[in-house]
Figure 1 (cartoon, rainbow, N blue to C red):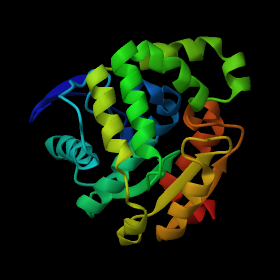
Figure 2: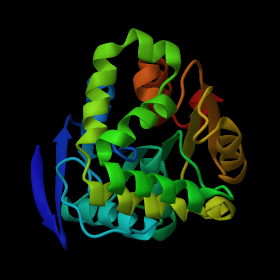
Figure 3: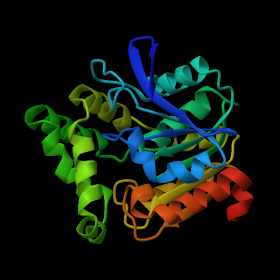
Figure 4: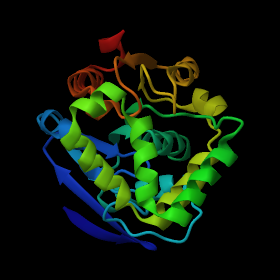
Length: 266
């Protein structure tokens, strides 16, 4: 693990493995440890950069609200400081939203892109939904956020079987910086990139959990229809955090795509 100063942030990150670069970006209220099930397979073929997004994990927080452009600039700044001129990107939920903004803001920086359980357009009630979560966090703390988040992130059968993993994830959510959580909620609430996906040149694998109600498969299919050179697949028996709930399926599809492109999954 390492730390570097970038503008107003101390960014926490890790680099492991050898080969072409792959950058991993986690969801809201997560941190880089969420990618643990992917690391053995990815580091066998790639040089993997994981980092904690502004206000999450070991990366410092700044006063809310944040914008998606700011979060994308953080990611680009880290890549620049590390001398990375081209990287694959695997983004989960918020990490996938950052990937879309980054692909638009810095054409040519991203190679193949995986968007897992993400979205490109806010629903009509987004402002109210996200404000209610901000209010809950500010009034009752991140522990209050954890339980409702777990019910959205995982299916009931998985939570019943995986008590140890659920406890680990609950603790990760609860220790997320309050300011970082609220700041990123504000950024997510504003996303409206669906119609701009046609501008992106790189290949993409767009995935959604079969039972994901937060970022449903219908949205991911719309994204794939607009993103040229993309392929869509559903993660079976998974809700919002498919990389944990269906590790083998997730790893298989991501590795096939990163090594062979969209045609490997067609």
